[in-house]
Image 1 (cartoon, rainbow, N blue to C red):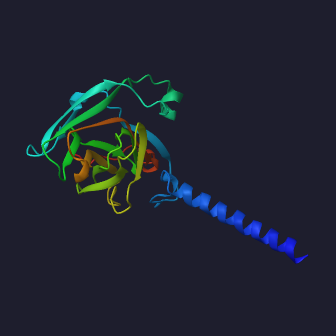
Image 2 (image 1 turned 90 degrees about the vertical axis):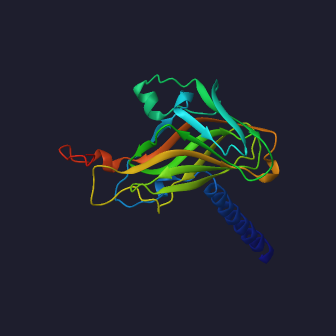
Image 3 (image 1 turned 135 degrees about the vertical axis):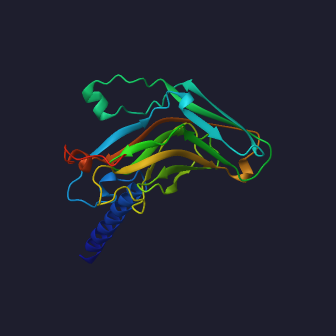
Length: 239
């Protein structure tokens, strides 16, 4: 009788182990906005569009002139796995979503390079931003993509989104660290952060010849509870 009981015990242990492994594997996937930086009793999370990269003239790309030549332009295309925003579907919003933004780099020599892709002016993200995502074609280079943001008080920060060592379109999502201050309890008329662009930090072993990268559909998941519960007769501190 001991042998069957032992077998059952082993099966239960293995089952629990696989369940725990599955939970851990899910934890390293996309961050869960519901569990990031909860500082209020209620949340109203919504996924919003920051940019669909339809206007290439709104974007600028820069790198040191000693390191190489960089340029950008738009192309027709879209990730096949991209899904429309739920709010746009419900409201039947027919916003243009035809183009992607392409960046081309011609290196002069190998080494550490910084390539900045920035909007012509910072893009505000209202509410308490939980995550930011973007679709990228990385061309399977071992470069690193970083997010450039600015907090409530104008302090700038870089947030690592991940390596670009993959082929085809991939959605990169990053959680906004809680140490980035997005509001001040003295003022209820504004909260959130500003998106200042992307920074590509190249791997010196692969920074040679030409490099191409493409972006589409920059989104944020943000908590708009504070924005929607604001007093209608409050005055903005923007003068």
